[in-house]
Length: 229
Length: 179
Image 1 (cartoon, rainbow over the protein chains, first blue to last red):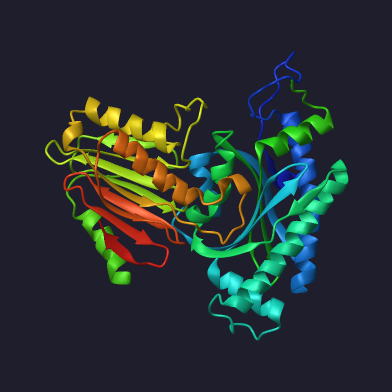
Image 2 (image 1 turned 90 degrees about the vertical axis):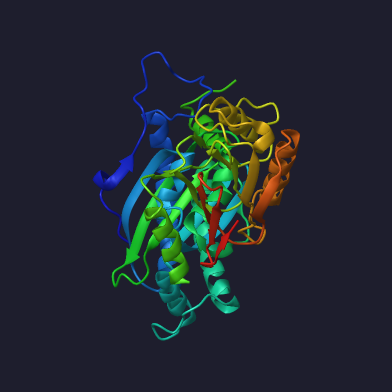
């Protein structure tokens, strides 16, 4: 697996004002807090993409990584705009912290991945029936578990993935599922966004991890960069 | 089906000098310009509430995300986030723009269950709960729901012509219906 150099990793976050260590209630991340989240996210993503490479039996190249805080209303733009028809593999995770994992593909790309997974000749899959959904769900299982295991091991936490749901729908409708939970606690959504592809470019997609506010609080407390009441 | 897509696009472009005003997640928009088309795209469990006064042609749209604010403060960025407070906000804003409550009518769309069960436990059936909460809030304001397209398992986009009160809904299955 190849990962772009650090210069390609977009990290967002504010500079921490002097004398403002710890003890904050809002969830805007300062740069040092974003660094903690990004180090963890990288471990998870590396492991998830290694899982994907094994599944499709090809080298997977990470094209971009970014960690950002976006207003909830702009979240569907992360997956091509609210009306764009996509295939999403969606799972939640629970345990010591909670959040959402979403793997998004254009339908024709998802069909190509299904062909790889099922050993079909390229171009055979043209629709999303039960067998095809199972293949993508299994992919979601592997990628989700790889990602969560890496993070759980780092933090000595327990994180359990849900069974994946495979959905063909408007991107906005799929994003609603994750965003609805986040907006109960925050007007912004934190997201780690990874775009990836195989060398032959058949298997490309976007891998989103959307932690809940509690997840962010837990990892920041764990790392010691934030104390809360 | 492509023809139906074209129909909406052409109706918007032929609809006069007005523009499409997008109402994003948790937002509320009200207009007195009868040429404006209010629109909301890619709704899953969210519900769009369109309310209009057919005499003054004042109309507005709320993009509801969750059923109830409970005791939580409502953010000024997303006044339409909750069905209860968002509907109240919309109706008061419409009244402020000259709409009369006794003439107001509502059309609602959305509230789908897009996943087959994968979701946090406290959000189970949230689309249906959103629809019920919107209906309750409108009932409290004595505003009748004259048309609706709710529930199901697919995403929707919604356009609302303030001049006529017409609402068009296009689903992820590329089916278009008029409310």
